[in-house]
Image 1: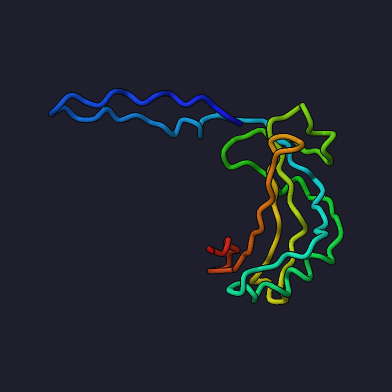
Image 2: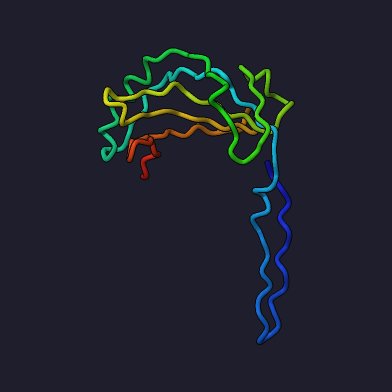
Length: 146
């Protein structure tokens, strides 16, 4: 969602302190966000860089998992956005500014590594999908840094 950004104030006069402004006011904007309640099936082979080949077997598992419905009771917005649950593009197109989707999640046998895809759409023809590699540290799964 594009928001107009205010122009910066003029530079301070010589010898006077700079004016402090809060340019992070976009965090205060609350939006209606539709969450697709169907975890989608991954239909293409993902090629990982060699440095992440330890996750290759999880990619193979991810490709075998079928669609599944999300338990919406597990989903909340930590930033206070209004979440609306839907199950298709028809629920989203033209009614809401953003849509979030997630694939099935593949775990290893120890449950200390996982892989998933998550997408964000701002229009039916505009969006992206990210691949997330997760690793458990101190009992919690974290996104592995690239």
